[in-house]
Length: 230
Ligand SMILES: [Ca+2]
Image 1: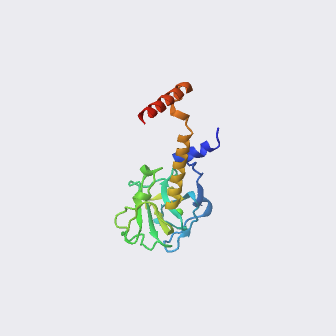
Image 2: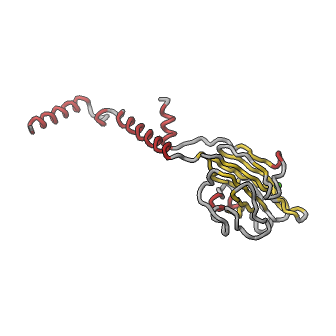
Image 3: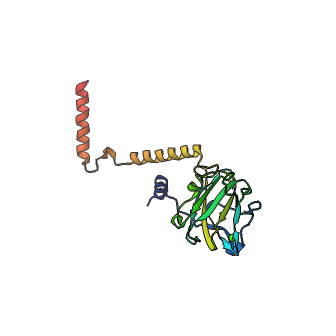
């Protein structure tokens, strides 16, 4: 097989092999995430998939709220937040809550009942397992709102389930590089060049089944017709 063929296939299909998710924070290993929005735990994200796992819920009347801050460097963006299996729910509502505020803190009161000041928020449920909830966060009523990926910057997240008991959560945060227009143009030019090369390397005359003798005779007839017309 031509060594270029796999690369060409990948370019044309956009096929990318998904890298295994890495663990950015696991409460069972690294301890409870911060309980105060004013001092969130800093969680470091890398390119690709990052798992943030922990527990929330209400024990002895106290809600274990979890707050963490992530920083996205220039050229990078948060593309999705997928709820993964291992996430569980409490009470009749069966809803967990996740919110995000721009900056290094969540200053919005957890008991104020207002989303003002949040960038977005979402109630996630069993139905969201293996689904991306970032888009839903962006349309949380009362919050500033956003659409698409979260661009470079600092963001603080707030996770809670106020039901009695313990609810687990596993979120997969996908970080990707921001597509650059010049790079996209180069990529398109490359695809076009490969397509032209593929076309020009097709069997001459484009008639694999036509004997060469007939092709030659056909050309001679055409040339003869051309001569007659001049
Ligand atoms: Ca916790």
